[in-house]
Length: 153
Image 1 (cartoon, rainbow, N blue to C red):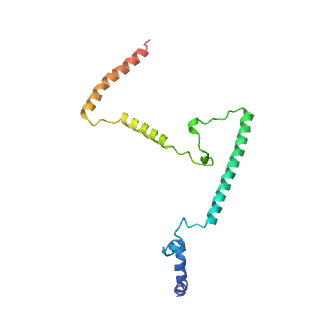
Image 2: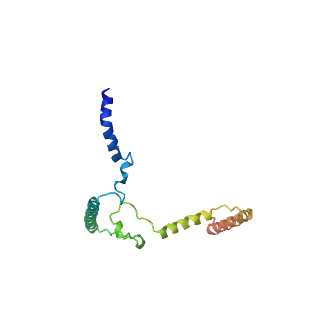
């Protein structure tokens, strides 16, 4: 009985608050523009992100000086990155791997399609017959090369 009375007293207040949690869509029309964030909060986030990036850049510089001192101490040479593997400056603080360019993706796709074409089974019967007839000749040529290279003692 006490639970029923408490529910009746607090129930209306819970319904008005539940919209803030995301249950109701009644309170959605209060701010239709942008992402709904206060400009001051957005500026503060941007500033915090810049500070974080600067902090990580400084830490990486310190690590690099330490690495260089170790290289100098033990006479090690620094690994030079290949010309094609240089990363843009915006990816300096990234943890993940570098994204492939569209040219690299196209080249990789062409390589995969060439491999598939090499082992593709012909659907035409005449092509299949010609490939089967070529197998003994290729096998004989391969055996001939091996026998020329090998000598029996």
